Length: 84
Image 1 (cartoon, rainbow, N blue to C red):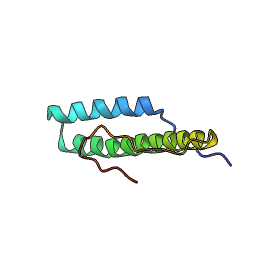
Image 2: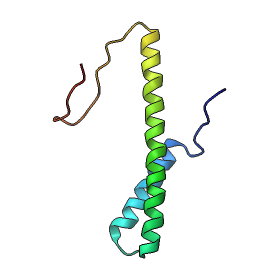
Image 3: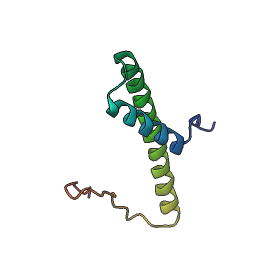
Image 4: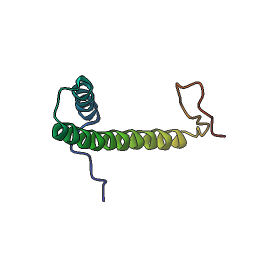
């Protein structure tokens, strides 16, 4: 059975999340609206994380099929530890 796909594409979820953050950073929304926006933001973040994890799994599978198994974790943070 195929996995259930997210109803919202990654790019759309990320764009909506950015809009929510911008609106919350302005600080001119009510407490109730802030809470609703925060809850929606958490949901969007989970959607984005799941999409990224699935993409990473696909890349790993493709690399393994091609006989390349020397993966290194990608990071743009200089203080991140590398996994051996």
